[in-house]
Length: 265
Image (cartoon, rainbow, N blue to C red; front, top):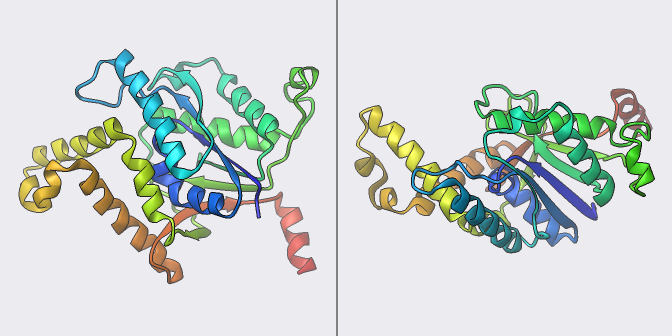
């Protein structure tokens, strides 16, 4: 079983939404889990001003990590919706440094090859994470890390997530940890309100009677989000015959090494 897990994410709630059940399951099995958050989430609201929201999102992230049983989150603090403005390589270096410092057995990250993600922060994190995982074990990649006492490290297991994931090859049974995931996600109060309000506003533009469809859930954002996430987890879980699941593109070694492992049996 893995002893250290690292999630590389764009926003304070991404780890819980896409992999909260998996993180909680690994934690119950004895792993230490770290969540690295690249941005401060300062623009995910219809109501708050950016500086106040950034502070709120940071505190909510700390409470959510505690609810999962994870370590306090690592906050890089880059401005929300501006990761694509960073100089090339800055985010990749930060991820490589985190991988080398924490030395995880498992990394969970956004899938760079998944289509249709409109968010520039998600795309930036996906590619930076993929590159970091490909090269964090090479000593001549950022050799200044060696001078600082940070050693190269190869991550054996990679779990890539996305809202649209056509190449799923691993479903994790989260039937026993879905409630933990939802409890952690509920700590992201400002983001939950924003996510649900965004969908409700679009539904109204589409001419839908939101109150008739959602009933009392229309006034209870977390209730509405929980309903949606349970339905999604049930659909994923059905693929392997369990109550609830989370889907990933799972990668271990170079294809040649994987072939040799398969031949060995």
